Length: 426
Image (cartoon, rainbow, N blue to C red):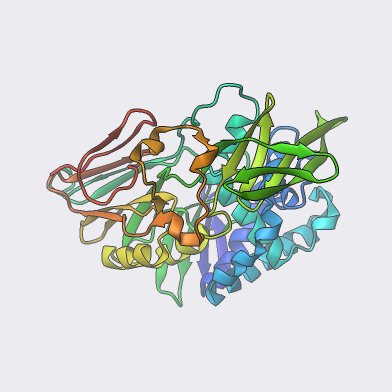
């Protein structure tokens, strides 16, 4: 049971018994305001978003197929029962709205939505939001290979000694749009059972506050750009009747051709075909640009789920709990800035980053084939390089789309090649 009212700006304020009740109302209110975008993400999980939207839709479809997001459903194994209960509540809210507004449905085959639909849509949102798609989106139309431009959010915390109010302050610029797949949606929720009040923004197909405050803590985050992918130039050998492969030492790495066939409707009317071809292998996808083959290796794909962490974060009531949560989850893609009601400020660099024998390899955009080393799972990463900075003497923290490579202490790191800088002020 929940009571919803909207203020003069149309922002929903939800007074709910518990989080599950609140999520049903969040879903319904969000559908009232932007059912179209929510449907685009749900349609993208079936590569049908571009059939209705010729701007964002084709790319959402392609990335979902390229990274094989629907087959990452095993990610459900890392979700808690509490989070899965929230997903079920979200499904109820969206399906209820769809049932009452049949004329707004773009494709009736996606309704009623199911648990898997929401999990895959959220993971697709996550993959693009943390920009794991950048290697493909950058390489696909370029003959000159270099790293993608960094884009993300900014968070600035000011300690009480520097603040005119004599309290810690947090300013966030999330760089979110007001329309499209990554548009922010502002909500205010009061949860009676959890004895919690939360205000901030959510994203389409999600229901937890991504950045905001629960009036005990306030938090913001920015993409940390750890080395979550590598690009290798590989020598692909094609043989008639035996497929394609490349050699890794004495081993043949088999390549399986994928022919992506889809279409979009320009201006909603004119069918326009979309054809893409690439290879899958056990080490990652291989694409061809001007006859040169590139292996895109993203071993953490499908291994983490950030929206569950955002849910747990929204219930923390002090910085100590935030630190424990971040240490436990080790979510690899974001840097956090947080303040609490005790006027403490915290910076957390959480990334599990690449371990490379030769530090010079960190500065090379495309690595040669002989640099490919197959290592099991988390051995790709140094799990001990988390950095926490609490109440620095300078009394401010700035997190602006920049991250160190291989941070294991608090020295200054400058990497002019990739524009990643980390500084700790004392």
